[in-house]
Image (tube, rainbow, N blue to C red; front, top):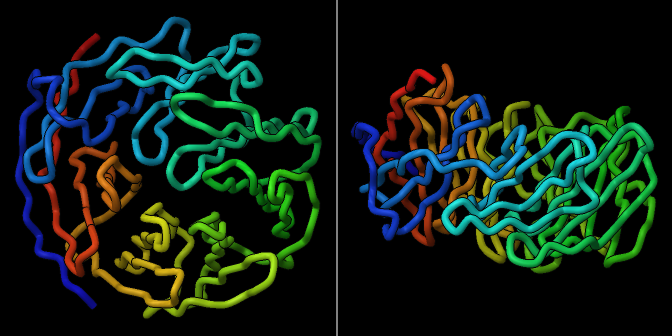
Length: 311
């Protein structure tokens, strides 16, 4: 197991040069304030707050932090918003607050599910040219997973069954896993393998149309584990409950990294490939970024501390 050096630095919030590289976004707990995280690994800062688009009620972060989902009231269309350019792409089929929102591993596709009417809409092509790839009338689904190209969709029912709902761009309803608890599931790799993590198990199941196989971990998975995107042929699993982060290669190799000395309440992927932002409890401040590139080592980036301002 690779051990991570614990290096922690603090930076006060200050206005930064918007010509700096953008690492990702910070959305405050109110979902009403957005800041850009600027700089490079090891030297990052926050921009001043960015004005929200008109009539936006809440903002959702997306994997890779290349765009934000801007949700509006029922009857008003949501949009894909890129804060640094101000560009918005309207999502005509999405309004109000869907019961389930699922984003693909790299944020290029999204699935929206409304329990009222059992309606699912899938978009792909984010952020530049989102288009509808599927509209389905099916339910009841507790959670969904969509592939990066928007051509694969899986759903877990309220009873725990895992179904494939959309395959190679065509509607299906195929049971792929009997009713069992899952810590997470998602599509990864060029072949869109469906990865499934089960609490209490030390294996990750990889399912394709033709094969099923398992990747073995060093410890049992907890219910707080979640898959994170990586590159074409690998992805990550962050499991704060077992203080571990795994790099899972579709070839079968598994690398384990210890998350020692930090309590994690949330985590999300950032723009640099393989970069993951881990938020501490109590509102997610301070925040710590973990980055693992193609090497064996992880390293901590500076803590970003944002001052709360009275409105």
